Length: 115
Ligand code: 5GP
Ligand code: ZN
View 1 (cartoon, rainbow, N blue to C red):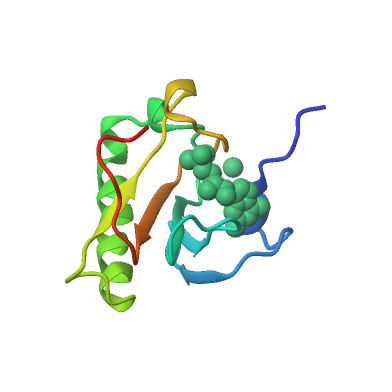
View 2: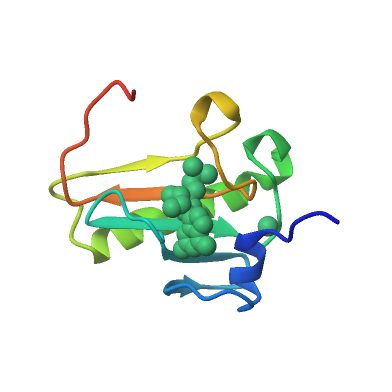
């Protein structure tokens, strides 16, 4: 039997998470192991395993994800100091959860390039 997707379970409230935003297409919640003072995950309700499953029809959804991230960044007071948006995709990126998610990270400086 395949493991249920933890992020789909969060969407269905079958697993708990601190949800900070929800609409008919997307959900945003706090990362369980934050790596920065602000660490939110923004996910589509539809299960895509990664960006590799996105098609041109999904462009409005991707725009919506990023647009919400900028709104949440403003709400968290990150606009002046800056923040980072990350979508890990595939093994080389370190992607751990196979449900497309956008990280919103802020509240401290980040180095570049990534390790
Ligand atoms: P990835 O490495 O796939 O880009 O990131 C997955 C993220 O999901 C990690 O930052 C990890 O801490 C977070 N995460 C994994 N499981 C859970 C969970 O059950 N609840 C929440 N809120 N975050 C999770
Ligand atoms: Zn899922």
